[in-house]
Image (cartoon, rainbow over all chains, first blue to last red; front, side, top):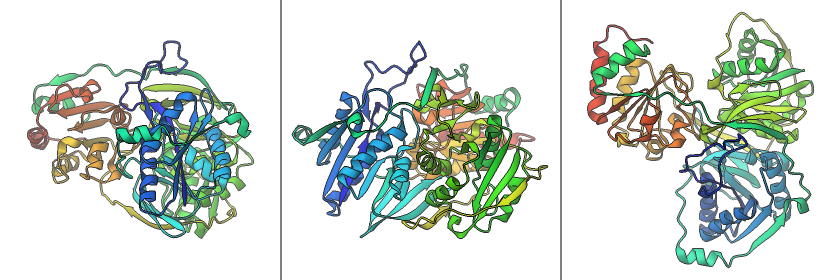
Length: 249
Length: 317
């Protein structure tokens, strides 16, 4: 079995994002970038499945500018076997990403495609479902547990009401929740080894995918600021304020 | 052109966020139709027809919709979209799972999680966990949009009498099978729509200590929330998680207990009307969004809080 895992380079989750003064986006210069957190869970799960003997190969793919390769190198350092980088500059919407991934799926013929359930930059939560749609594959989104069976996966999904379990036939798409597993850290020797693992480079235009944006970003603004609150000295004061000032209890 | 809202329901009742989504959808175009896909779901179609904002209900009743799978929903939705400019649903786990599958097959770039309708093609949406708001314009002919339900008031549920039209399902999808759903039943208000939410974080230390929160929630008729750290640690189940990858809540009163206030948690609660933070670390980031901050040990503060509430003559419900 072969597992393809898609990873995205995003602003690190610990960075306090700032909006550019001209309203064209957020500041990315000299800002720490990392792999989108649930994409790390996707890689971890694929590597674990390989270690259990149920998969033969894990291929990591990223789509983006030259620096996006860092995310593939990181995936290689924690156990992916080889990498693919599809070069595109600028914002690529989930629809275009799913079309690029479809081309790669047709070329690589993986049995499973894993990725994070949502990228923490655009917060779209679309790519996995879109890829499943255009491949006509089943989708198991927001996965917090995956059990590999002979020709299917049993996946526990986190939904608003609790948990849902579904069984999807292979081939399938899984989008991963942060609770799926605990991603491992790359050791220094493995980081060095990862530099020697194969990383194929392609251009989106060579794949024949139109990546032109369909959504125009008119402006990006700071969210409305909350006015500064106060510290209360005691629980009694807190309850009085809530009752008589805020009038919410 | 008319707009089509996909109803979320449990085969008996509409789920509450369908009412909020109806409000948003009717701001795009008043000729709002709703598609109800369910199994033995006549009561749902009837409830939808009674929402005054809804002009027409299309009802497809078939066993393939029993568990609301995105695959079976999608084939049927695609059969019904011809006369609509917009396909809409709530941006909760139901809509997030479903809508991209529909959008991709319509070759449409979806606009996710809108918090305001600026015009029929332009919307406001949060990005980067709500640290920025983007105004975006969709250039696709048919638009697929998911709606952040807590950003819109629920539509009135009675007084309407829209026509109900029966229709046929699309193809059944056989490569996916529903196994089970473990829903946590509770008599409390739903987290997403509660007037008061009290949430616990890592500071709660274990699941047993959540009873301190439960006691106050009982008193205030509040829903119980949690930070991701508390859910990851197993103190409480995932359906309670508030934040960027959990639920977004906008209650009148949000009480954060033992929660430091990571960016990802703030994304789920900072639009609340009044925020209270109880934390022993005076430097915790949660205090930067709190209207009322109490720097205290929660194990002392929570029992006192309950005691003070018990002294009040009346409490709003």
